[in-house]
Length: 86
Image 1 (cartoon, one colour):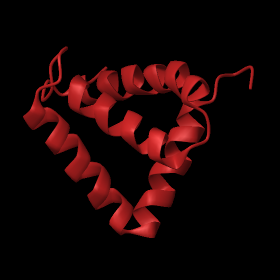
Image 2 (image 1 turned 90 degrees about the horizontal axis):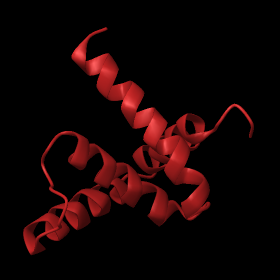
Image 3 (image 1 turned 135 degrees about the horizontal axis):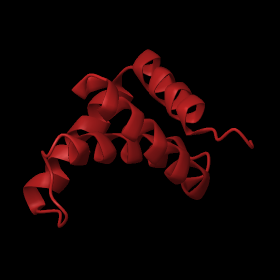
Image 4 (image 1 turned 180 degrees about the vertical axis):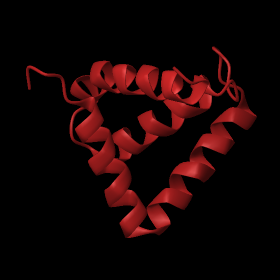
């Protein structure tokens, strides 16, 4: 399995755990996606710095600038966040 495929597998597993806990709020869904990806890529650490918070906010706001990107991100998160029991 390629490194990228492994990352995607871990990401989808994490979404399955996170999405049911954060509910249907699009703001929370996008925030969770951004944070999971940044953490997985090693861009943010265990403790968030002010710079990390600013980066997360900027990425989230950029996603919300495009309704198409926002809807795709939410749709993908919900799809990948489903467990086989949902």
